[in-house]
Image (cartoon, rainbow, N blue to C red; front, top):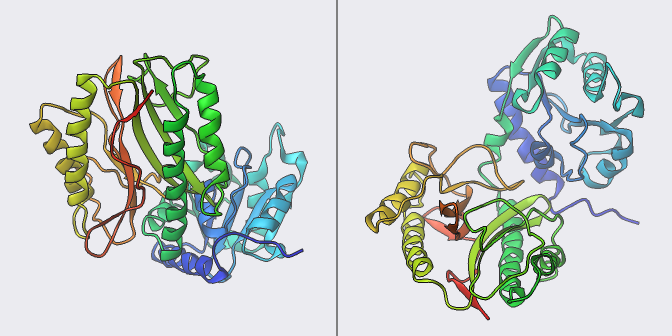
Length: 388
């Protein structure tokens, strides 16, 4: 039986690897040890959940394909998902799991030495590694030039290809459908857990023949917990007069498109209506500020200044780069972030506003920067969903 290895052709991965190799050359790095699980996905197609133990993708300047070193029981998943040939998948033995002195990074170091790479310069994603692991690399590779390549690949991921944008559109369509399903199942007397199950089923089944390929965390913050932001469902039931804030994300092949909306069981309070109107006005202002050459700070301040004129403020940032994984830890939509917007950068414009301990409101969109402005990938109505 032929194995379908994911949404992207081989040349898409080779294109990404060329970008990484160019950065390696700039930093004078002969081999890059990629340990961040999302960067591994970006460069290989691997999305299985095995990052709870050491694993690493080794990219070299001379080889077209990287080598993936991971736990033996997870190696078959890599063979199913990675674009590389089977010979590029190296399985390390179970002996290295929960060993008192060694772990999977010893297998990575062994490979670097056996492949003759220890004589050159090696890059590490040090932010993804413990201090003890970095010390192990330095100790066992004594004499090797070790270069900190923290977030080097992550910043490359910031600008998406057209193929990546298409997958994010598919994820966004799933998010829209899940938000719509939430409006159908949030009712007085319904358990939060039962509503969650219905919403999650849409995130898994997907839409338009495109299923979700991972279930991302869902935040359901219902009265009296609307002043919170990141808690899951509770054992409680929805009640008449309750407000419900939801944050979720459809996911396709590791790519997320997040979306937030607010629901009211019965007529919304005057306070909620006012905050909604102000926040939507700020959302429109922020999206209008998106264009190539503008900065993340420009977009953020368009939102902040708009709502401040209406007597509202928001303490937290109003968005962040998004793609593989919920958050790409690079650019933020906040005052002072001078990252310059480029076409096909993608962001979650996250306007959740937790005003006090007992009250908050959420609305958001996932968008991409175009050559002339903005393309909003999510399309759920920008309203308070009133349910009965």
